[in-house]
Image 1 (tube, rainbow, N blue to C red):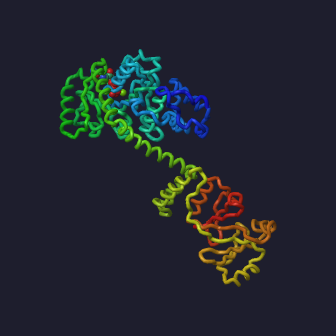
Image 2 (cartoon, rainbow, N blue to C red):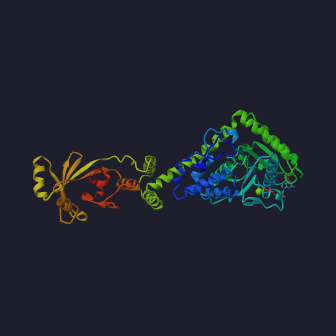
Image 3 (cartoon, rainbow, N blue to C red):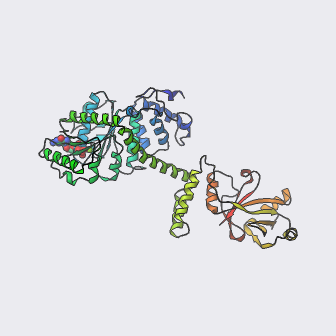
Length: 491
Ligand SMILES: Nc1nc2c(ncn2[C@@H]2O[C@H](COP(=O)(O)OP(=O)(O)O)[C@@H](O)[C@H]2O)c(=O)[nH]1
Ligand SMILES: [Mg+2]
């Protein structure tokens, strides 16, 4: 695939992962279109970036394939990937203004920048900043800067997931610094902050934003404190309070978060902030902390990915919304044990390597079905062998009379057609008397039925019937079972 051999914007040695047949497997997506999108994304095309971000935000089926390509080949040094800097603080603390200043600084230093604003009130709009308040008009049309505002609710799979994916796509498009703006409240936001390599916590004087009143968690996540709006009264006090809090909490690692004062609206202090960011980055790389931090973020993400994968597989096993509702009802009515159910469903999803493996169904041979012209005649032989007929009954649905002869934990089932034009009648006409079917007993007929159906095994009828003795059953077509008609029966 020629298109996939383009070099990575950062590293010419990097080729997209899974560039082979994987793209075609992205069902529902047009594989060549996706390959071309990835190629343009890697070339830094702005429209491709916007499109790719939309794909991951909407959780499109092609998103996984796209993100896999964005991740690139393994072997890239962690330090060569984009640096993610998170900015968090109360609304109005000046996050957008400071991010704007940091973006300018990075651009001036020749680095490409992506901004992800997880705050709908931020004065950014897809690809450009609404620069009335903050005069960012100079950036308009700069291909080295891309800004994306994200709504804070309603994303499939959670906000942190989406933010992580958007960052990954920006990185693939060649952005070297990724600035994440997020309001420092709520669990979602804390999750987002974990995505950043560097977390800048912003405080301001005189906003009732005293250090004591801050959410407990936020102090711990700071790698660098910024006291913004330090043109106002009280910046000293905020700084003192941060220091006091730090000495109170005592236990520091090798890095003591510095406090930087800024006036984001004028750019004052931004140089110092960038100096601290550079210093912290060097510390991260030298101490190995960068990889540890990223591993912690990946761990959270991996759990989420596994959950997603599991749900998708279960869906492929026929566990759609309706089935899930039915199970929930069964559990509520105490017809089904939820713990066993969850374990069984998970096992069935895991067994589904290629969509054809069936979870072990605890089978045993229930009976052998033998087609005979007359039960009255045939049973004489079996009775002479010492077997006895348990029960004789008519199964109306199959238009057949049935006699069961107990044989250890299994049975022999004699089948006599009630009509010539019935399944057993037709079998007799075609093949004469003989072994008609093998019946396997399973613990859970419905689960077996759903699994086999999901695995595209050919069934005689797409429904579960009620047979002799009130047992549930269905038939697997001989074409799927080596020429033998296979009955699955049980409770
Ligand atoms: N006086 C002063 N105002 C600032 C400073 N930084 C930002 N602002 C203003 O504070 C308001 C909120 O800023 P914004 O960046 O939107 O805050 P955010 O909600 O944290 O993103 C805006 O009117 C900014 O112009 C600063 O350092 N000093
Ligand atoms: Mg903002």
